[in-house]
Length: 126
Image 1 (spheres, rainbow, N blue to C red):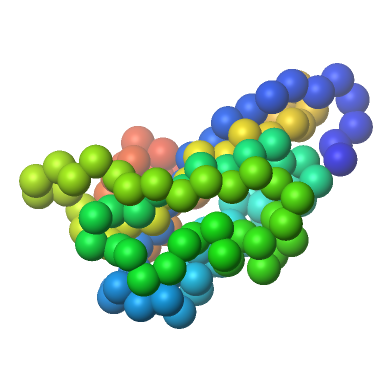
Image 2 (image 1 turned 180 degrees about the vertical axis):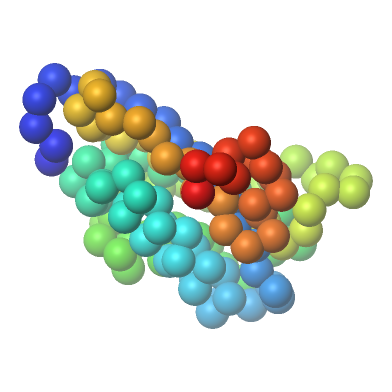
């Protein structure tokens, strides 16, 4: 846990997969969660909850499985379907993470793979 006065933060992340297969979803989710943890100096004990969403074309696995394998076994995790908007980027896994950190902390959102195009305004921070 980070020392000092604490506050609740929320950060977002997203990545894409090439195919709707369990291992692809687990691997991409693990990569995304590891990047988020490293860039934000977080561990599972800092995290309050995670909400994962998947685009309608992904249903081979729950992203929460990868998070649990990384030590998020005591963190409430939820998976849901993303709104199916015509023309939206396909095969996307998103996460919204709530966590505690020192009040001086700056949340570093993480967008990997083709999902970088979702938040080009954050690209300079990646």
